[in-house]
Length: 110
Image (cartoon, rainbow, N blue to C red; front, side, top):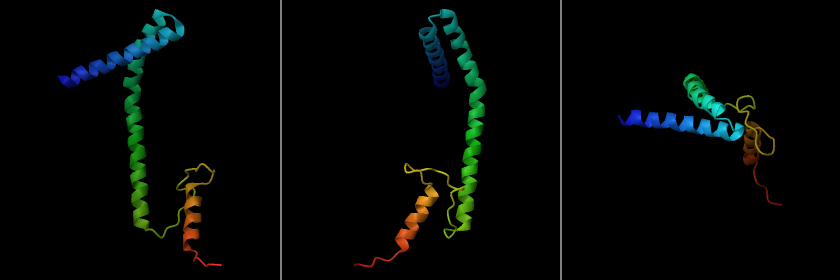
């Protein structure tokens, strides 16, 4: 019963927000009403698609992590595997490779 009350409250909140945003933007009660009806319908249609997409993304990330674990730590990182860009514009793989090279050098005092 509490679950049903929560879901009903969420739908009412979504409809109210959609109505108010459209009413403020257009000044039209009719347009606010259309938005209040369309917004929950769009959510019902799009949220399952959204959830399915994120499940596929998570499954792909798990597969990549398992493949990396099986390959072992000796496998070099490549920019195509880890395309994240840092603030300096370097890829994460490039930054890690440079760090690895720097840490492997021996310190020789002058």
